Image 1 (cartoon, rainbow, N blue to C red):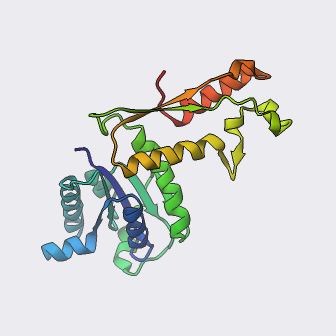
Image 2 (image 1 turned 180 degrees about the horizontal axis):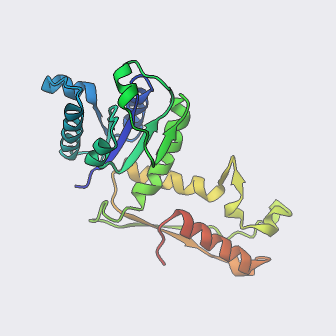
Length: 236
């Protein structure tokens, strides 16, 4: 079984544990906390060698987990330590300039690239954005759930005649509500149900039913095709 590792790192007091606890519950993932691991192994070596050793230890433990997703939080101040851990998804808690321990303030190396950067403390806001991003990423991984294949057909070729001028410009399914297209909400509900059932790899088929009869049909089909290519793995 492939394990998707999410590493939350940053200075002590930046909110790593709070976010990790929230994400692990929302994703039904295994949560690994560095302090708990150090306590278990009775290892409190915070020298560079000890910190890099801790990164290797956390990596090994996370790989042994039976759950598909692991959420790991620890300071991980060195770039080398992050490379050793080799997370699938990096979250940098950049919420404070100085941590509870001055030692880490001096040695902490700012990352050059992360998947998500937290600049202010709001666990509900950030966890929601991260979970949505993770759903797309994990959902599109071909190495997850190879045994079964589940398909869904979404009929999204409505004319949008009741939308007035807005319906003439873009397909009805791409009209945005609170910043996201209508179809985004439909697909997210579908994905969440399959996640809860612990289902295997899935394919989304977006139908162009009656799209050719719409006004500006060629443009609409092109826009829908771009939406498919940009956000979702599709099959014909």
